[in-house]
Length: 163
Ligand code: COA
Image (cartoon, rainbow, N blue to C red; front, side, top):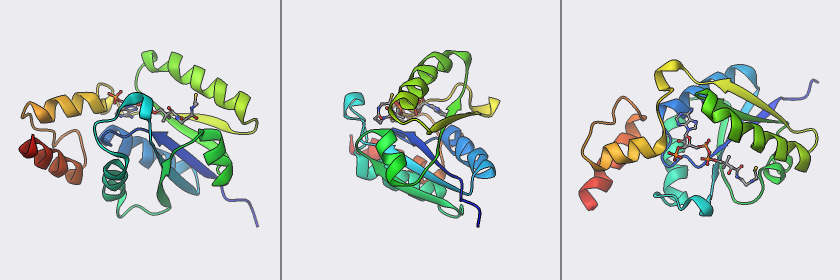
């Protein structure tokens, strides 16, 4: 039997956007299985707690096959090894993403030889999108319906009512 090709797509997903979902759907065409790894990311001081970011990703990928969603608390290379993933998937939106991504991929290669990074080009519809843009829009009362999956839009709306 041939080995299953498992990829891991890591990110902070604060919150997950349609841009991330676009990368997920493209990655699913390339691999047998995809693990979306939601990083604890304490250095980024995420707005949404890890539990809520995990829930938002889970709600957003409901209905898609071959995906699991897991928390990522330590090093990505360790997570990949523990989950038998051979590939890291990252989305590229613009040339400006390249420098950071190149650095991250190189560090991961040094730490975990054998772990390959594959870059997927985000749809041009989402080149401008980021989680912080979505958060700002939502909290200023803008309509985020075109930028995030419906369950995330709903949560953002509820959050705004609470603050
Ligand atoms: N669509 C929309 N937005 C996108 C996007 C896309 N396709 N791709 C990236 N973004 C946005 C994100 O929303 C995020 O926006 P924000 O900064 O406004 O919140 C920004 O781009 C950066 O996100 P991303 O590129 O996914 O990086 P990240 O900081 O969320 O995640 C990790 C980085 C988690 C992958 C990395 O820190 C990691 O691997 N951590 C584990 C620890 C480790 O192993 N460290 C060593 C690795 S060098």
